[in-house]
Length: 216
Image (cartoon, rainbow, N blue to C red; front, side, top):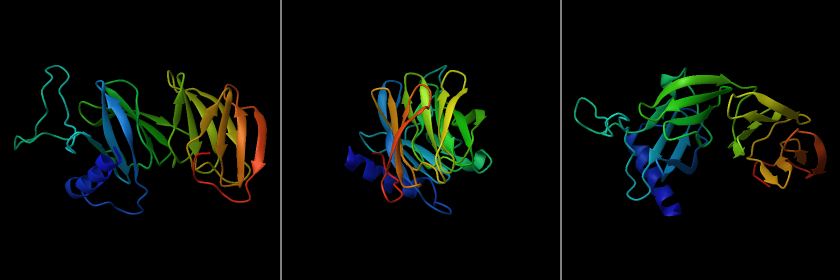
């Protein structure tokens, strides 16, 4: 899988344009229509790649099941372009809500619902702060790490914020993890935290004597 991911990065660099500004790329897996695909998020684009051959996953017309094509007859790739959404920037892996919709975190304090049939935005959900790290999903709840303010739990059903835990001075730049009923995460404020995943209630913290930007 790592080989395919590296190949995908090289291929995408040549087929979907030059990265602009600061680059913070991430590679992950997203499941659509029962198939696992490589997803590459970097600055102004999110691209979906077939892991079997490295080709771009095409847009599919859901009513006919046929590949969508451009005026030259070429398959249109499933690429999310930030320039089409107020210059959105992408640094984290998207979440598949279902076969028709991806949820993509935009660095500009937004979550974007993306129609996978057209690669267009269906809905914009404002959030509290910038997002630089992957969102953790479990049992219908998203645990969202924020660049400056800490971490929030949000319902995937209606996007209601269930709770927010604020770190001392700096935010969370790494995906959290869950152990039993605890949400555990590191922060740039030099601490590792444990809070109750259901309520965000503080349980403990450990001074790591330095900022941490990786998952515990």
